[in-house]
Image 1 (tube, rainbow, N blue to C red):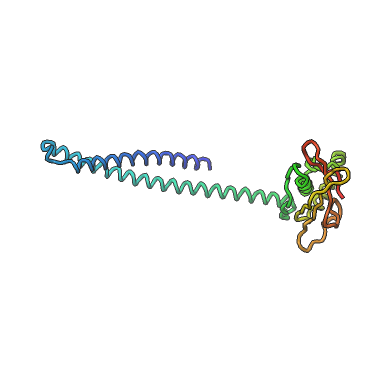
Image 2 (image 1 turned 180 degrees about the horizontal axis):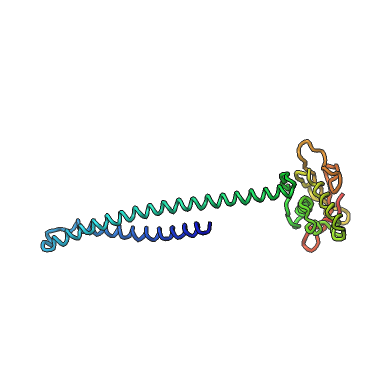
Length: 240
């Protein structure tokens, strides 16, 4: 692939230089021929033969440059074909990489297509971002990010045995497996001055609850999070 790209770049450069040189020569020859045609013969009777010879020479030069110009156009056509072939090859390579990634992902999920995560890692700049980051980490099984955003969980995950941690990750994924999205309501304050954020669960049509009636959702359509702003980040300190 790199060889095709290098060849295309060389052809583009050489073709462009040749085209500019030939075009300048062709324009100069045409200008000389026009000047000679307009020159009065009576003023140079002794040099008439030289003038005619010069005209014939210029005609041959114009014919040669015209032929060379046609070759340049042909070369430019070859460059366009090579460029299109390169773009096609790059598209095929990208499609192959996407297909390989999808096949590898299907193998990791026992042949089942992976469901798109409706949440994203939004960081912890706002209460809403912190809650969505927590849900994203639960869906992806990302225990490190989950510990950073949820202080309740942070104290338990590091002390779990490997088997218990693996079961917890499966539980978190199952808890969020049937949740399509989340809708936040206006923020509130509790008596302690903490921010309380209420969120409404959005589930697919025909679904009434999560696959596992555990975790932060339960069978309810709403949930409440208590958050604090610490060291420039919002963290979840409670949920009910």
